Length: 57
Ligand SMILES: [Zn+2]
Image (cartoon, rainbow, N blue to C red):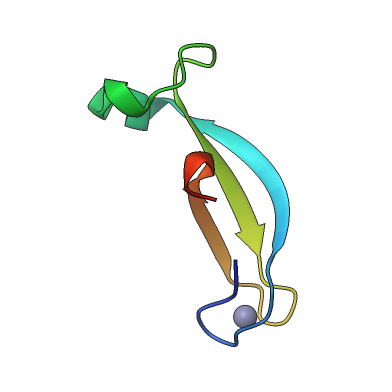
């Protein structure tokens, strides 16, 4: 994914599990993790961070 501010390709630096999202929307929750798996991306140019659901990649 690209940074919305400067168009630089962002670095995928971490995965996290959003347990609250799984509670709100159980259909999206991963049955193994018990939450929604998300990818955290950081822009190397401006430091902007974005988090998105891993399934949307
Ligand atoms: Zn940026």
